[in-house]
Image 1 (cartoon, one colour):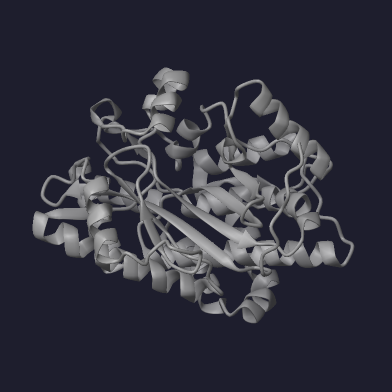
Image 2: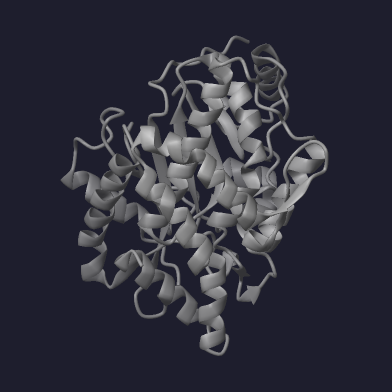
Length: 381
């Protein structure tokens, strides 16, 4: 099958931020997402009418709202739209005593108690995936970066996989699961990869090989259409973007902006390499798998494999060198301030570190963890 790739303005952005609704007193999840986003959209009928406007939608579970920006020119533009959407959500939820909760998983909620959104595609997902599919009480941040040529899609994908562990470690925000500390920085990563259509992408040597894979998956009933291939990094042909889908849900807008800036700078740098005839090197498959696991397990304390010669480096040390290299790119893209906040995450701690610190300070009380996340999301702290 032939899959056309829409041409986008280079390095334009789109951000998807999945959040949940919780009771403002108990911190527990509540199935009020659909009625909330529908109330907001009733007040803003122009939202979502084209790619330039923000949009709210539901997700797999009724406790979830997904905020989707329009096509944005820079990181500041994405933040502006997310602020607007969050403010409109709060106009609906505040009078009801509900709060916005943003993290990769909920620290104590039971997946068995959550209600699935009544849509055919979600019921089919549960029917096919059974036990693993029913556990998807997870929330993430997805970043789309525009590409102006199909020829860049696969090389940029390969290059981004080298920095997979860096982005995952910075965003890791899901140490607790069903009331227990899993020992992982990102439990969400471990859960989500159990779906047969999720996880790390395959290696495609050509666009024809990618087309053949999608054709084979449709022919054998694995997926029904291209978007159901929910790989951690993937080209999105209809939008003309590369999409990073593996970051945990982040608790603050400034963190969303920092990870968006890093993603944009990486994609832009790799695109420049392709334009100059320097094809990004893809790590060996076992290196990519190991780096993902290390980042999910150890977060910013991981040691990352940096090249095909088995060289390794401390994650924060490698991140510092990466930020120095990307600063000129950030200056051109107008996101230097947001990119600098990556250093703040390394200095002050990522989400998983904050959650564990709050749990320790409150004698293991995970309600305190949930309510601290609520506070951080509201105050952008």
